[in-house]
Length: 237
Image 1 (cartoon, rainbow, N blue to C red):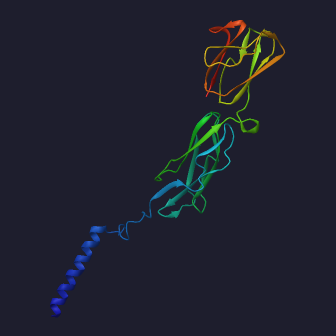
Image 2: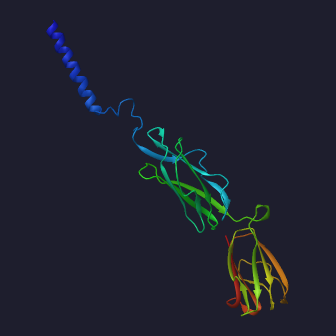
Image 3: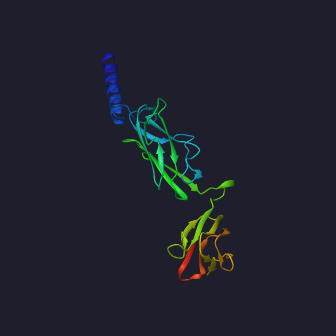
């Protein structure tokens, strides 16, 4: 009976060893398949600052945040490279190391373009890197609306609108200023807007708020036409 029990006991040990080998000799699949304790990862950390809206060419109100982990533990000293796309866009700082909590933050200075903008945080070798962020940039003036735009009517060096072609946001007010000469602002085609009336001499101003998107064409009846000469366009987006 003793010899039989020893045989049974030996078979049980062999079976247990085989089961352990099937699950992996390091036991990494034991305990329900938790995160690999050696894996490096990067992700947004709430509040992440993603999805904000702000003024083009200005800092967003809230910083962007990511967290770097190894397994489930925060990693201190990980190098994070922050970057943003767009004319004049920047991140401050653009390179930093994570703190004891694994967190890295950076302030996003939006580019000058109106609309969607993009930035990211990159951590070399980390799963989930680069971590992407988006923001919406808009122009802003007093009272939170779009900034006004100015166009000059000039005769020095040639009769012209300066600038002749502009792109603006819906709701922007455009003011034409007669710097010199004898001019007017006459719309043509569709969509249209109210013109300035008969030609007048400088100094003079005329303003128009554009509330609907479209391409607006205008000219000076004294020095231009719908197709050439002293002519300008306003693209409203």
